[in-house]
Amino acid sequence: MGSVRSDNNYDVIIAGGGMVGSSLALALEPLGLSVAIVEPVARTSMSQPSFDDRSTALSRSTQRMFEAMGLWHEIVAAATPISSIHVSDKGRFGFSHIDAEEQGVEALGYVVINRVLGGVLQAALENVATLDFFCPARIVAASCGSETVMVTTADDHGKSGNLTCKLLVAADGANSSVREMLGITAKQVAYGQRAIIGNVLTEKPLNNCAYERFTADGPLALLPVVDERAGFVWTVSEQDADRVLGLDDQAFLAEMQQSFGYRLGSFSKVGKRASYPLALSKALRLTAQRAVLVGNAAHGLHPVAAQGFNLGLRDVAALCDCIADTLHESGSIADIGNAELLARYAQWRSSDQKKLVGFTDGIVRLFSSSRAPVRLLRDVGMLGFDLVPGVRSLFAKHTMGLAGHLPRLSRGVPLS
Ligand SMILES: Cc1cc2nc3c(=O)[nH]c(=O)nc-3n(C[C@H](O)[C@H](O)[C@H](O)COP(=O)(O)OP(=O)(O)OC[C@H]3O[C@@H](n4cnc5c(N)ncnc54)[C@H](O)[C@@H]3O)c2cc1C
Image (tube, rainbow, N blue to C red; front, side):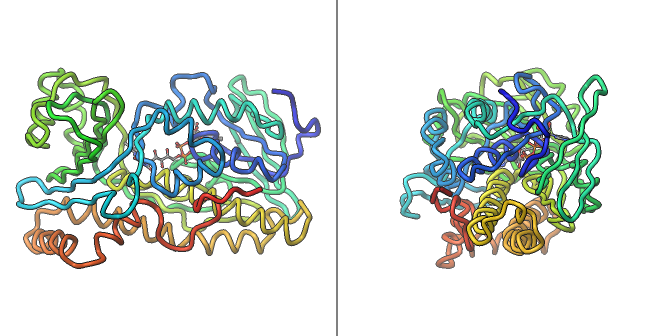
C-alpha cells in the first residue's frame, strides 16, 4: 500500500484496526477522506486479538450495514442464519422462544467466525485508496488542539513518528490506552466470570436455532455454525475457570453437558478452547476535543446478549452519518471533529449504549442470583416475557439492533 499522505496529515486517524476500527475505515471510504489506521498487531498474525476463533452473532442492523457497504455477500457466504432463539433457565421449568417467522424476518441474525469476518474486512481494506495502515505500531501519545490532533506512534523497535488529523477515533478496545490519553475515565466492573469458547458436535442438529441456557455460574450459549457444529460460549466463575480449562476433552464435555442438559442429545468432539475474562466497562464521556470513542473503547459488554460488536457498529454508523452531514452542510473538511459534530455523536449514541449496557448487565445479575426474591422475579420475568404481548417483539427488536433512531448505514442506506 502506498502512502496517501506524505506529510502524515490525515482527515481521520483510527486507533485500532480490530473489528470496529477496520469497519469504520471501510464505512468512511465513500466520503473520500484520507484515513490512517494505527494497529499494534501485524495484520497477518494469527494472534490478532479481534479476529480470533470466537463466533459472533451479527444482528439485522449489522447485516444491513454490511449490505450498504457492499460486503455482505462475502460475509453471508461464510455465515449461518439464526432462525430461532431458545432461552432456558437450568433447574427451572419453562423456556422462551423467539422465531424469525413470527417476527416477519428471514433470520434473526447470522453467526460468523471472527477470523473469517476479519479476512473479509482486511481484504477489503487493501482496496481503499485513501487509507494508510501503520502496522505494527501503537499510539503512545495524543495531544488535542482546537484545529488538529497530533498523535505519536511507536513501532516494535521503539521507532517513533508523528501524525496529525482533524479527528481521532479511539477503537482500541475495552482497555483503551488512547481513551486514557484523552483524559476519559471508564467505569470498569469485573463480573468474576470467564467465557470459555470453542466448538462441539451435538447429537441432534441445531437446525439454525441459537440456545441460551442460564446456570448458577452464568449463561451457556450454543450457536449454529458451519459444518453442523455448535459454537459455544460457556461462562464459568473466575475461581473455577483454570480448572475447567485444564480438563481433558472427555471431562470437559461431561461438565458442559451437565450444565446444558440433553436437549440436543450428547456432546462430542470438542475443539480447541480459549477464554476471556468478563467485565463491564463504560466510558464516562464519549468525546474529547477533536476525538471520539467507538466500539469496546466506549463500552465493553458481557457476551450474554451477543451485542458488543453490533453496538460498536452502530457507533460507527452514527459517526459516519455525523461526518457526512457536516461535510454536506459546511463543505469544509476542517469541520470534521468540530464541537457540534462531537456533541451530536455523543447525544445520539448515549441512549442506545445506556440501554444495552443496562440490559446486558441486568440479565447477568438477574440470572446469576440464587436469592429467593430474585428467583421469583426471574420466573415472573420469563412468564411476562412469553405472555405479555409486545414484550417478546421488543426484545427481538433490541436483539436485531432495530430499536431506536437508526443511522443511515444501520438502515442499509449507503453513505454516498
Ligand atoms: C466470548 C465473547 C463472545 C462475543 N460474542 C459476540 C457476539 O456474538 N456478538 C457481538 O455483537 N459481540 C460479541 N462479542 C463482543 C465483541 O467481540 C466485541 O464487542 C468486539 O470485538 C469489539 O471490537 P473492537 O474493535 O471495539 O475492540 P477489539 O476487538 O478489542 O480490538 C481493538 C484493537 O485495537 C488494537 N489496539 C490496542 N491498543 C492499541 C493502541 N494503543 N493503539 C492502537 N491500537 C491498539 C488491538 O490490537 C485490537 O486490534 C463477544 C465478546 C466475547 C469476549
